[in-house]
Amino acid sequence: MKNDIIEIRWHGRGGQGAVTSAELTALAAIHEGKYAQAFPSFGPERRGAPVLAFNRIRTDRAVRERSGIIKPDIVVVIDPGLVSLINVTDGLKPGGTLIVNSARSVEDLQQDFSGDWKLAVVDAASIAKKLLGVNIVNTTMLGALIKATEVIDCDSLREPLEERFGARAKSNFEACKQAAENTVISEITPSGDKRPRSFAVEKLPKWNELPVGCVVTDVGNTKAFCTGNWKSQHPEWLDSKCIKCGICSIFCPEGCIKQQKDGFFRADLFYCKGCGICARECWTQAIKMVEEA
Ligand code: SF4
Ligand code: SF4
Image 1 (tube, rainbow, N blue to C red):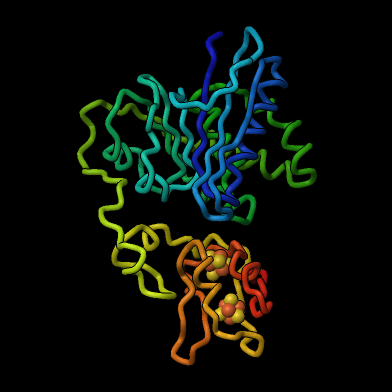
Image 2 (image 1 turned 180 degrees about the horizontal axis):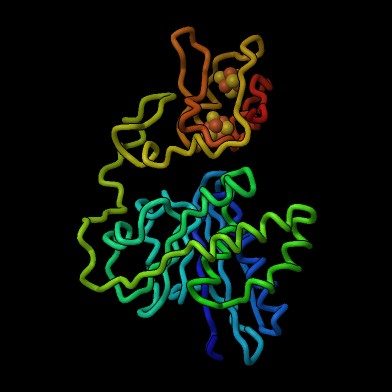
């Protein structure tokens, strides 16, 4: 690593551990005697919503910059679904590195991007499921970061992982090492963009055109996000307490609570991300959040 400052942007969803990845990276760098920062950027939502985390790492002097990072040297994408939803390469410096968790091959994935970057791909989900038993890939992706950039050493992660995960540190370290071994790296060329990409929502309805209590599937991006598989809990309705006011459907950030024929409300669990806002907003306590099996 050169003495210049290295800036990293992590893309994930709430609950995937992007912030933890950034913190562990900073701790590993500090363990090596470098100077480092880690900080998150959250939107107003929680589990399932896209989140960002950042690192600054420098070897020769303290990091005093406190501004946001808009031109990163390295971008790490923890959630493969974000590649088609967000411009993850926004601001990525020429010569920078894009690291993606994806089951797609590096040859296939590089067709989606155009720029003077290095692309590193690893199927972190498979590794995490095999070694950790869950599809939480934040520590696994540290291995891809190490392989693609050498910004930190693998061994420097041991202590931060032990402090953070205790008895589970060993398996997380193993997942990290396996990811490093399985990361495939390729160059992207500026002319490599063969597939049209659009991140903009084409047309949104006016507020008074929206149906009451529904999943908006024909316009907007609710359908595209499909956050149902991210929930660790889901709402259950106690109809005896429900007065059919519809408040829960108004506050649901995914717009996935729909009124049934009998007048009671239910969430479409394919889109429900388990944030619990509906249960908090229901003023008759007719909704309770239940842990996923
Ligand atoms: S906010 Fe509570 S009482 Fe009102 S419709 Fe929803 S569940 Fe029923
Ligand atoms: S149904 Fe409830 S828990 Fe599910 S996304 Fe909507 S507000 Fe959140």
